[in-house]
Length: 115
Image 1 (cartoon, rainbow, N blue to C red):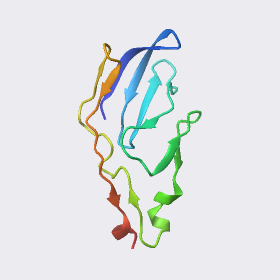
Image 2: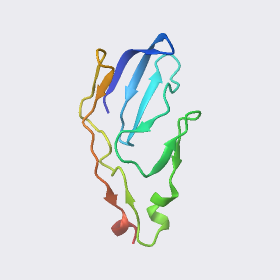
Image 3: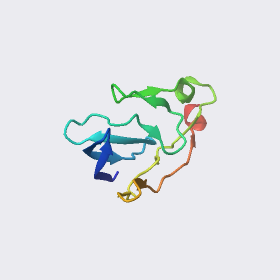
Image 4: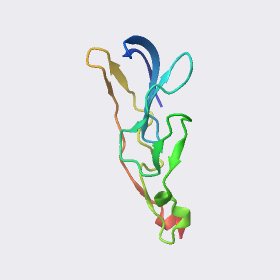
């Protein structure tokens, strides 16, 4: 997935960050020097495979409702393996402070796979 480097004003100071919108559907902002999360990642497409990304660890908090392998009828999971964002470019506009992404919002019914 494409990543974008930028200087953002955070807490009154300029910080060099790396922004990424990967397949998992959550948007990350990382400090370039430390690699630590700058933001609590939030979803940019519908997501149900995880409840959230833990800010302290950077790891997802799994959602038991999306565990298709534990359900007799499977589960519909967002985003699908195609992902929330893939190879499509993304960009950052410092004038607006916005990141532009071409997201994918397709679920996958893992029911047929789980049976």
